[in-house]
Length: 239
Image 1 (tube, rainbow, N blue to C red):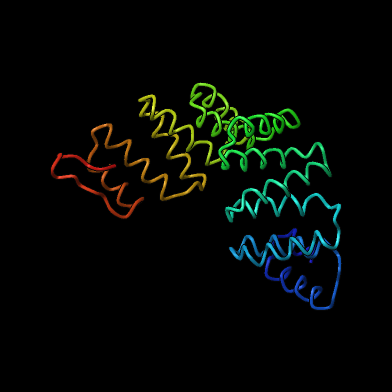
Image 2 (image 1 turned 90 degrees about the vertical axis):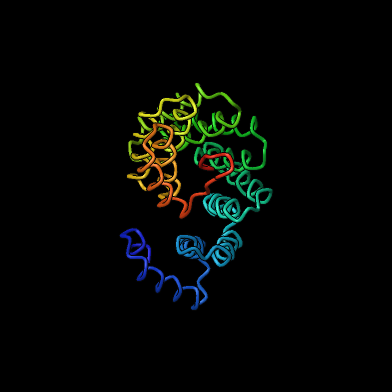
């Protein structure tokens, strides 16, 4: 099962994990890995159950708490997500990915300054982890510190040229500063690197409209959002 999973053969790995579980295996890795497969398949509630079983079978395995924290955040169960992520850090004090995830959770909870502290701790523990710089960029944007956010996002892209979300976030900052050509370039890179396609297309459309390219603007907005609202009374597009 572990071999198939590491090779990306998810269907075969899934069969073996299910077989182990049906036979009464208690290895925490079986439950944790099977939970990860279910999460990637979008079966979040089932994944949550198996992550909890992994913890029941090995209460000292930090990855199970970390994975459950990510899942709970995806489900909007932020307080519980925070608790499990903190437990992962307690078990592994230099767990930089957990600090990065804690920053995301705290930011979603509106604890923006605490989120910044957690994310900067993640960077301190691993200065080469691009996701942390992207997350810090988002937090700094929320704090209104756009110049610092731009620096952090550019660092994320420097570390990982395929990080689509960082291009998208940088595009938003550049657009707000009226640097439309560079913003457009970053939104296109975000789409190329598999950031949220509809969101990217809509943002590309908005930049085209702001540049006066109405045909392409309307085309991309339609592709991204499916429809465009015209305010005929005030003679403008509601974008």
